[in-house]
Image (cartoon, rainbow, N blue to C red; front, side, top):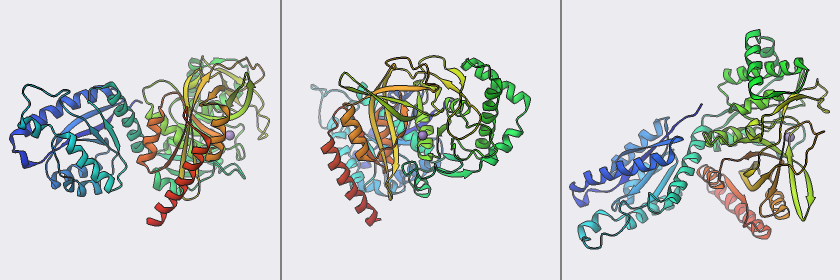
Length: 494
Ligand code: MN
């Protein structure tokens, strides 16, 4: 299911220096695009498109980029001076993410041969300043990456940005199916779906559990057999309750069909609306997440959409991204450990070992005992991502953590679990999270750097709060207050 996202590399110049330099610049553009393309392979590819020398050429190129569904973003670089008024018309039109690469073709000054011809050809040092100015003046969200273009740090930043840009592209075509509404009376999982579609592009629509139960009744024996074979390959069977596993298989087939019928790649369920269903989707939701679908429980469509987008942004990394919930804590040796889990639905992509399928009573919801995959999540650096609606704007909160092997076995806990330590420590991170209004539901990702999520949020003009090694609660409270004012002023200005 791996996609390859296309990025266009364009070089700004002008006619002032004579036509003779254009071939040289184009040759360099091709070479540089090859280096960039290698760096982002296999996730994306970078094509050198053209030199842009006039306002008309710039406008035409951006028009083409807007209309080409394969294009996930534009990378610009000014080889010479390229007067920025020429860029206004095109930039006003551009709907794709843009990265301004501030670099130079030559790594070093050729001390012995440098003359005024060299100076006139290699002037990104001031050409890129002119270019950056017009983005700032026009309030265009963009990534600026600065440094020699073969430098690994520069290439890392570009690689991360291609993921963020792919997230924007995918968001614009994401449909989310909600089976039932929000969990009654819960605030943080609620939100304005119209605003979300305007901000992210996510189209979120609700279906009744009856729509799913109809699909389940029509599952064929062949479909069921195929699904059970997949389970046997992916999981270890630790139950003799075949009927429960079979029912989850039917739920999975039914949900997949419902999603396909609606061209949707993400879904939610709620244990409060299971009319016509025998069990809450457990293993079914887990296995669909494992296949790349977005999911969150209790009608939490924001987290469900983020999981799908994050799985695509991480495509090919092979790490893991899951729906997660902060559940309970353990304090020992001056540390606070978080135990994360859900009542059933954690994605097997974060499992440390082959998950076991078990069947246990649920305790709430009053339905039959659902099969679920049970495992410990793996160790490693990770992030927890929460998206909340503050009324008038969305805020994304990302906290860095270190996932660890659970300190001890939990033989009576019948769900998948993850354990982690927060940065910079438990108190600061959780105080900051609570001040920021972060949810108990998150997407846990072992793949994506904070930078990928920050750039994604910035491109969409979503507020972004980072909690990490340098977080200080009082400073963060000021940031939250200032952001509040700034977003309110923006609303007034629109
Ligand atoms: Mn929950």
